[in-house]
Structures are given as C-alpha cells and as structure tokens.
Image 1: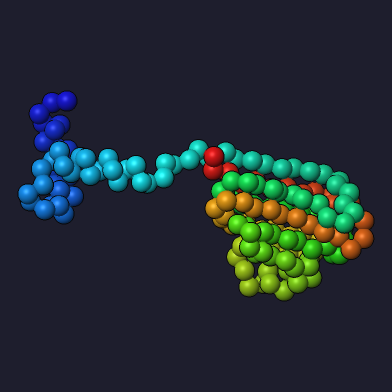
Image 2: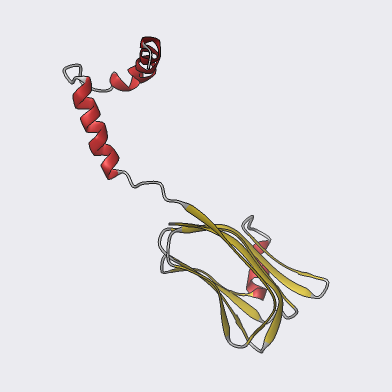
Length: 159
C-alpha cells in the first residue's frame, strides 16, 4: 500500500478517530475494534428456498413451511377451490396469523402484506414480507377434504 493510499484511509477514519480520547493511540483503538468485532454476530449465509406444489389434497392440516433457523418469508400463495380453509402462521413461537379465509378477506382490505380474494372460482391468500429470528411455521387446515390448486412460496433462511 502506497503512502498516498494510507493517507487517504487515515483521512476517511479521522471522524471515527476523533470519537476516541486523544491519549489513546492507534494500537489501542485497533485492539478495541477487534474486541468489539468478536461480540458482533457474523453475517450468516442466506439460502433461498422455494416450494411449488400443485393439486395437493389436504385432509385436516398440511404443513407448508417448517423452518428451524432465522429467515424471511418473501411470499406465500395458496389457491383453493373452496373458501373453507384457515391459515396458521407461527414465528418464533408466537402465533402471527390464526384466521380462516373469510376472516383474512376482511383484513386484507387494510393490509399491504396480506391479500385474500376470490378469482375465477379460486380462493387465494397471498402473504409476504414476514421475518423471524429462530423458527417459522406456516400451516393450512381445512374443514373438509380439499385439493388445493397450488401452494407456492419463496423464503430466505439464514444459516
């Protein structure tokens, strides 16, 4: 590294160095930075998962997603020929959604993250942008046996 590059880096660091007491030298600041870095969690690798199921017959309950690590639901879409189903979302052990399709339709009018609507005889629920730290589960249950046209989802897991 040339002297000019070192000077440029020091100039960029000057506002940060000014935060420390003047009696601390650069070696002490570097040691402090190493100690702080040890305490900051490392960035984890992101793995994108997808699910694309067609003509899924459900009797009782069906577990769509069961993640045991932190992550983010990008999108979940359920298409059913019947409105007689419910969606259950559990994030970090806390129930986030426990609603029937009918209940979801009234909520979706007021939410940017949830859509529930009927289209050409299909009852569709779309959920997006939901984060969790440790675990996540998305489940559907039906009042009577139902063959879902499509269950589709994409989510990130942090490993």
